[in-house]
Length: 491
Image (tube, rainbow, N blue to C red):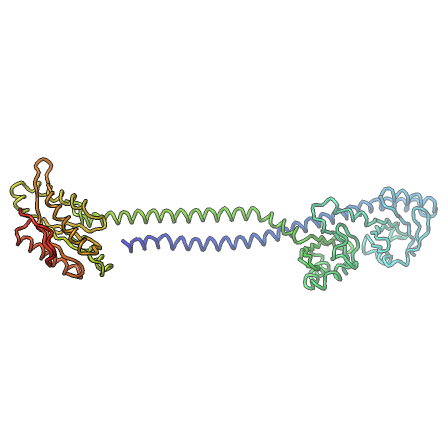
């Protein structure tokens, strides 16, 4: 039965253990994958947000450029010889484009603004870019403006129209965003020179006017990554640290003048966004882990209940196998086994064994019938079991033979007292419901371990006591070794 229980436990424990290991491994893998996907999702979101700001900025420049195109067409038709009229048109252009400065410039760099004031821009560093005509915009660090350049006439044969878009407008772009106060948005050229800032302009990444010089000392590899992305017009996010502040920089190409837009947010902000994305995954993993735990507990409960039932069934079967069906006492095998077990576990405890033989039992069967004889045995089993402790061992070991093993009888006084109790029991024992029959017995007593330190020896000693009692005339109790008499009676 024990082997069956162990086999049953292994049958569910091994597959359940394997399943738990597999599920835990899958959950860990899934969690790691979800974390990476959350980080990738945050990066995509930041890239999309940065691209959105870039589109808004370019849209502003394009609106200015459309005004410039219209004014350029006007100058092509009316010419630029009349300075008064030219200033008036430039003034109208400034209002329509919502800029503070508009120039008409000749190919040699001589210009006039909407107020009619003459200017020489030919010596400006950015004017060479205008002459090259490679890009539609130029940047003036002195005035911190993007110059929107439009040609007047074919190949600018009649000069240039220049509309100055102030970067102060760009500075307002992050004011209504959902980013924290440490976030910033910056336009840079290929060398990392800062052309415009929106948001936290005092951020350590923006000090010195060049983003690379501000971050390269502590972030060489990631600064190199950003530089490569600017050169390759690619996009992406990197983590950087400036002092104690950790940030995420996301760069995207603006698509014009080889400028790029960089969005900087705190790492804590990016982490909050990732945690929000991971929330559903965490909830699902928690729910799944809870289901697995409940399943495991249910399996454990089922196994425990099954084991309890199995043990109860085992005990019930053992009890049935150990029980004498007629008297309800232990049968011969159970009596012998239990006494041997107790002797082995308590070799120094003084105990006593009664061997009881019903006197003239054959006569009872012959004169009153076997059914009545069974009733005598049944009554004896019930009544004798009631006068001793539940821990004592009482059994029917033969047709009309009974054995009583009393545990832990410490003194001779107790031995004599228990012997007297047994003798008095048979003085008052009667069987039969309608016909009362007074049955007697010959009783032998042996003491463990003095008169036998194993079952067989003790049994033989008690049996010798029975022989003495029968020899003396039955209906009495006799010790294997004579002790102080406990009284005797005659049948």
